[in-house]
Image 1 (cartoon, rainbow, N blue to C red):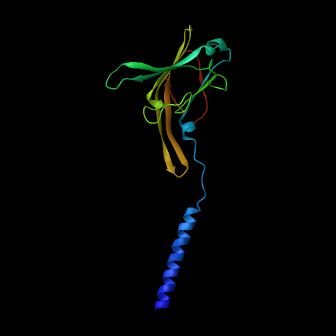
Image 2 (image 1 turned 120 degrees about the vertical axis):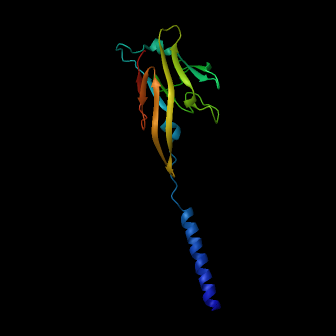
Image 3 (image 1 turned 45 degrees about the horizontal axis):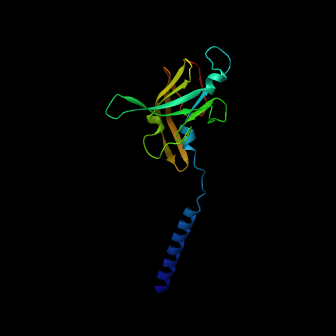
Length: 173
């Protein structure tokens, strides 16, 4: 009886050790780049067609990030960036707006979706407005992130770019 109990205890401990070992040998996965998946991608049209931008207009382009005051309707500028003169976008006249681009935000709120953005050129008669950014996504299991909603208002157009990392073409307003 004692041998039987010792043998069962040995088998139980061995099975438990195998279970723990097999769980720890789970194949590691590559975390998705959630910042890239949730980013807003914009490209200023330079085709030469009506409504497109010239390189001199874009070289003077700056972005103003606005935030609405809590408990008030006042909207105030938070910061201003001269985008292309500082060569913040190595891919031509493109902008990625996310937590890390074009410049990083501090950890925690407010998030880039809490801001409104305006692109203007120094001495130019145009502006591009980006606002009402809506994101909805989550992890469904380890290493799988699903984007259920990604949209925004660009000038007066409401765009749904859910699941896309393509650049949205911008024309002058």
